Every structure is written in structure tokens, then in C-alpha cells.
Length: 350
Image (cartoon, rainbow, N blue to C red; front, side):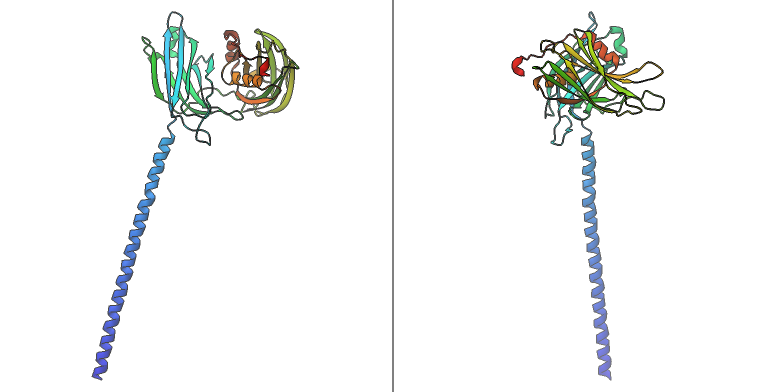
């Protein structure tokens, strides 16, 4: 009996020790698990900080080197677009096709564009543009330099811009400096875009213009829509020559036309011809309203000159491109003020 009691006491003690050891093991396991969770949480929070840093780096749009010079005697402002550096990549390949658009506000009577540089984030432009601005108007004038990524078959993407208040500039010396590009402001009125193709066959003396479509046109009617049609006109030596127009598309801001017009233009005339493509809102009871225009020819610049030059260098082949519509005042001033410069090509080009 005594021996049995001793055995029971020993068994109870052993079981108690076993339970204690088991409980301790479980507690140790929980503590180690908490350590793992804590370390994994800290590891997870670190990339979040990296992401925010990445977001801030995405805001960097690049830098632009420009120059300003003003001649008070001739009231002439010369703007130099020198080069850009570290531009934001807009294309899938990690690069861009940049060009610069230059104009002033609030007049916005003239818009210039540099040539496009393909597949680079550090283009060197070295182009100069001249504006006629009276000295008394400098204080109320802003100069806008916008850097775009060129896309032939879609809207050009804006990379960034500079807005310079000319009233704050010291005109006692030539200004030349680098500045960081900022996000573009939407102060300018958007008139819409139009896509058309050009084709020139020199052996047949035939210029063909195909109006394909337009999009995001300015609302001209009270119902928030328009009744657009397109007028195609040729001008030779600043004189109106030939014109044709598309059908009217009812109640739409994104009309589709796909209408082709052909003009007889001799080879010796093609460098003197300017093409005006204008979009109008049709009104039955009143005068038709102009929505916007595009001017092309050897005397133009930027995307307009590029499209015309591509047509001339690719005879018998239709070349399509989107263009942003400009106001009638902008196009008309270009027609009057700009002197045509010729694109050098010969019969061998064709």
C-alpha cells in the first residue's frame, strides 16, 4: 500500500513536469512566431517607402535650356530653344520623340514648333523664334514653352512646360538658363483634332487629300454638340485657288468622314501651294461658324511642315497624321506673315 502511494506521487510529479515543459515549448513557439511576423511586417513597410519615393521621381519631367533676347528698337523678342535633358520617357521602349511648341499669352497669335528628335530623352534643338511684342505689353505677356512626345497616329503627349512672365525678366542682357519642366496647365481652349492623309503623284500632277475623322471638337451649339463639316482649300502665292468640302455630320463632336478630294497641281507649283483644312459648324438659320484650322505647305513649320515633307518624300503613298486645330486668327496670321522657305528636292526625289 505504501509502495503504491509512492508510485502515484511520482507519476503525478512526472506528468506535471511534462505539462510545464509542453506549455513552455508552446509559449516559446508563439514568441518566435511573433518575431517572424514583426520582421515580415517591417520588411513589408520598407517597399512602401520605396514606392512613394518612386512616385515622387515620376513627377520629374526633365529640364529645358532656353534663351531670351529683346530688341526695344524693333519690338522683337527672340526665343531660343537650345536643348532638353533627362526628359520623362513616354514610349514603351523607355524613350520619347520630343519637340517643343512655343507661343505667348494672351495674344497667342503665333505658334512655333521645333523639329522632332526620335528616340531620345536629351535632344539638342538649337532653334530660334521671333515674336513682335511692344515693350509696353511685355508686363502682361507670358511665354509658354511646351515639350511634347510626337505620335503620328494618336494625340501627342505633353511631357511638361515652362511658363515665363516676361514682365519679371531683366532685359539688360541676354537670358540663357536651365529650368525644370512642370506639369502642363490647361489654360488654352481645346478646339479639337483632325486626322487626314496626303498623297502626291508627280507624274499625274495629282494631289489627293482624304479627310478621315475628327475628335473632341469644340461645342458650338446650345445642346452641347456641333454639326461639323470640313473645307479643303488650296492657296497659291497667298491667293485662294481651289476648294472642296465634305458632307455635314449631325450632332457629333467626333465625326467620321473618310472622304477624298483630288486636285491637279503641277510639279512646279507644289512648293508654292499651301493647304488649309478647316472644320466648320453648319447652321441652317445663321452663318456657319469656324471651329478651327490647319495650314500645311512648304512655308509652314513643326508638325504641319513635317506632314507635307513626308508626303513629298513618299510619292504615290498616302501619309496620314493627326493635327491639333488652331484658331482662325493663328492660321490667318501665319498665311500673311510667314514667307515660304523651300524644301530642297528634285525630280529624283520621286
